Length: 79
Image 1 (cartoon, rainbow, N blue to C red):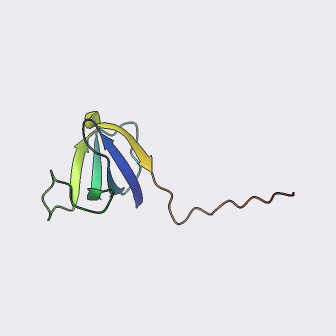
Image 2 (cartoon, rainbow, N blue to C red):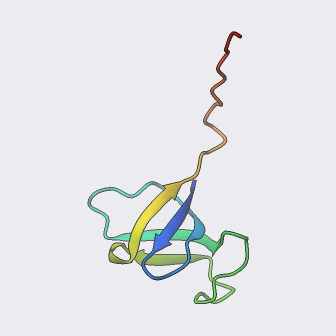
């Protein structure tokens, strides 16, 4: 599961989880646990809803958040 920030046309961005990153053939985006970036509920989604389906024509772009599996790059510099 990956956490993404979804940027919709004419709406504030929101956080959600996706099972897999979307492919070129996908026409919708399945968003699990959609919420505002501050963790509050989205005003246009009922509080008991856990998954929403967003058509691609509404999505401007996605930001893919780093996962805990990715290791941190440490660089060493000499003075």
